Image 1 (cartoon, rainbow, N blue to C red):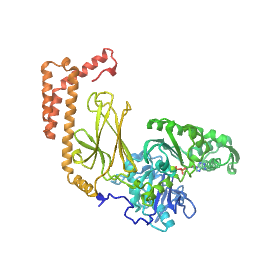
Image 2 (cartoon, protein in one colour):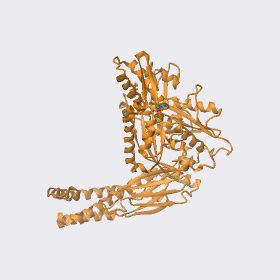
Image 3 (tube, rainbow, N blue to C red):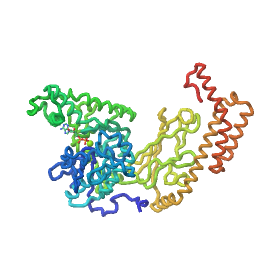
Image 4 (tube, rainbow, N blue to C red):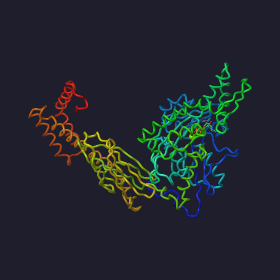
Length: 621
Ligand code: ADP
Ligand code: MG
């Protein structure tokens, strides 16, 4: 029963038995598989010694072909040869329409499924099915190499993938009959490949420049927990643009006049080769006898050609740092990922920008798969003394108490730890300067039905109108199972934090009961939740009325009007705790009706103030 599966993967096997677990980088252009082979993590090649498997699937009459062979058929049979499907994983039909020029396929308009399906001569297929074909080839490669079935895999996904995109990736793995230990963010995998999770603390920038895309991720690593602070980049910027820049230069230099598709193709192939040569050499000869020229391109000229492109990536870095709200000096490590980071100018410029030496020792094509394999090995239970707690999942959700005694989940149960999640809250009253934070654990809607873990208070919030403060509450569970909570008022930077220890003292039996309860009480819980929400709403109305009446009640209302509103307000307060959801709704509505005119007068008054020359910021409606 899935509901009760709360033990960690890999734990049931005998301690000395080795579980083979693979890491899979399921890429837009290329995919790879890596595995720990007798202590050494390496990517696995096919029979032709290719480590990279092009993420291309060809649907033939009776066959499905994946990889290089499929890529070779792409020009001849584009509609039945699918590539770059990662771009539509977890996307709806509407999203796909806007990608029409990127993915020139025929979508099946006659199906009720929410997932877009591409027509091929065999059948119509979704991105999930196409990805499953790629995953199968890679897992078969691993199983053949090791001569044994895989116990599970870690698959990497871009840090910006949302829930739907992640779920689609999991579904693809399920179709390929793989046991997914977890999905891992690509930049995190790259950082893990360099062992940063073992040694360093602090901010990490992962700079990933591939063939057609650029991704920058800013990670914060604390006690083995990676938190993604920001992601950015450009989904149409990469090594291909360098090839184009060289090709344009060639056209200019050789004064090529007759340009057709074939000429461009030849120019691009030669340009790409020249670019890759210049990684090792200071200059290279571009010889195209069929076009009647031969030219030397040196590194200085090449750098000049691609400098704008590199600058564009740095602009994205600047933006990501701003989103992460950190300065570039705060970055401790820069990890280079993607084939195009082999270009020396890229490493130079990135190093200058961050003022440090970027990490380039590992093959930038393989670094993500290697990190995934390292993680898979730990999750399979092969490293009993190392980071064992990476295996842990949260047995019950960690929640926060919100107004009305409701429990709001911050981290859902079964999330692998270590993990850190943040959520923003605001103040409820005008001028509120402190906020009580109640940390609870459990699946039920009401705090009283969950387990209380800790109380703490955030003090010193600058007084603001209700709803103006922005309080970021971060829950973090580290590799040791220690939970800490931090709260920060974002505009003032006021902070408070607490460490909770031990975090989970519940027995498995208790957990089971709590889970069962949350199922059988679902209906009851929803009713209770709705009532609690109405109570919160009622209280909000009372607060608003009080605050308004104190400010200008006596100026804008005559005694009778003032009294009518006060009576209704008091009535609502009196029934607040005892009334049913419906009764509360009625009482709130009646206050709204009674104070309608007052609200109008207040708005008028503030408009008058503005007209009399006051700054709009001084006016409160
Ligand atoms: P993607 O992430 O899009 O799948 P990759 O990370 O595999 O792409 O990178 C592919 C890009 O890397 C191509 O543009 C390729 O020309 C470039 N590349 C590969 N090797 C080199 C090299 N030695 N020098 C410069 N660019 C290279
Ligand atoms: Mg890539």
